[in-house]
Amino acid sequence: MGLNHSDVHDGKYTDSYYSGGKYNSYNSFAFEIDYIKRHERLMNYKMSFSYISRKFDMNSSYSMHNYERNIDAKFKLGYISFAFLPEIACGKKLRFIFNLGPSIDLLVNGSQSGSNYSVNGVSVSGTDYYSASDTFSKILIGLKSGIGFDYPLTDKIFFQFKTNLSTVFNNFVSGKNLNYVTVHCRNASLLAGVCYYFKK
Image (cartoon, rainbow, N blue to C red; front, side, top):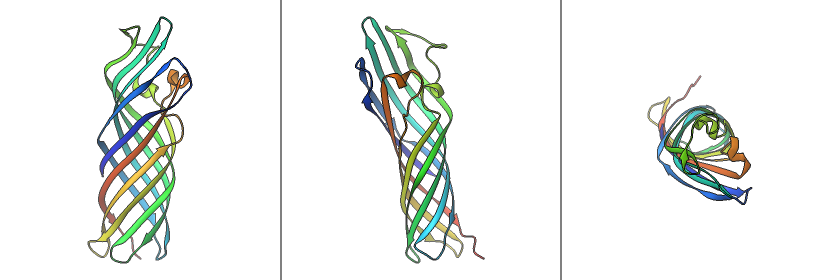
């Protein structure tokens, strides 16, 4: 369990009327449970199940002739994340670890606050300008990596500290936003916890 920080930023503009988005991210939290098939070898196998909170401000504008559409809101999104992470581990008492592999994040909850959506300066709601869970992609495909160390507290209990870095391959936004912009998301987490070693 630990801190999480998401870096959200625009990629390629697909529409000349889009003037670019501004994003400001906040520290949030992450919770992770790992299963590691560890041998007395260099390469091991790990499966990761985690909950990731992404918290940020988003201000974007789309202007065309006499039409202007804005998103100006604070978003808090919650994702369940699954990852398969082959792991390199070395050392005896203090064991250094590095892992890298594919991940998939599923959007399970979202909230927003602020002026939210507006057209020509007038706030709107309803079917045209939807909830946070409709503004952002419900499935994110990415690559996740981690680096850290294990230290034994007892024969079967270990303390672990690590940092996770991940990047999303597909568009972070969805719905009408897909028409004019690609938004990227990177993630960094600092995690600490305990591990139990199931020895025979």
